[in-house]
Length: 226
Image (cartoon, rainbow, N blue to C red; front, side, top):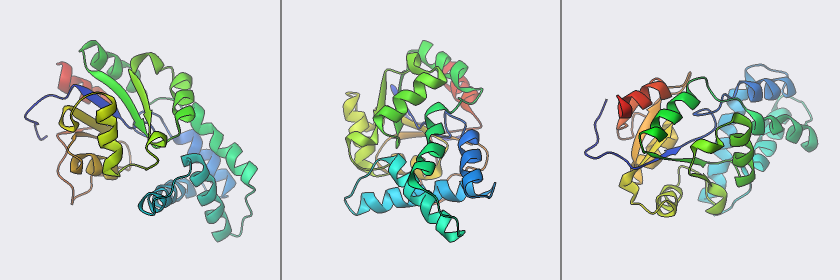
């Protein structure tokens, strides 16, 4: 585990998969595509096209990108997916449960005096609904969405904007995420980083090593609080 020279004052948490369990969403997507293993490909494709829009100076809400890419994968499997059916399947994103380690760990970190903030590709209304459904709203000082910037993570402008919103320098922030691409982008933007090794997730070997590398948020809390 690499050690940073200074402690962060603000922890920026990715939401989907890092804090919230995607299993119910994967079930819905798998049912719609008639393939229980298709959800991982869909999520990757959604991320790919969100970045296509960002590098092309375009923006559409994450849920719209999700619907569009779900329809694309449906066509590959000769399945016609109506936009309304896709939206209905993806609406479960607003009510995903938190991983079991999340609330106890966040409470410890907040009690320690760290400022906790979400930073997500989900739209503002979406993350608000997610935090309320998961029972986590009270633990976060702010709920930040890329919707305000009109660019998706891992564009450096997103991380720089988040630090500015919190009134601190990028180096005083730590991005906490279960995605190698997110951790890489934050590191290249000058933030400290923590990689959370959720199942099936890996660090990007060409990126700087994370300042903190943990199995779950329980270990992250222990890193700062023990």
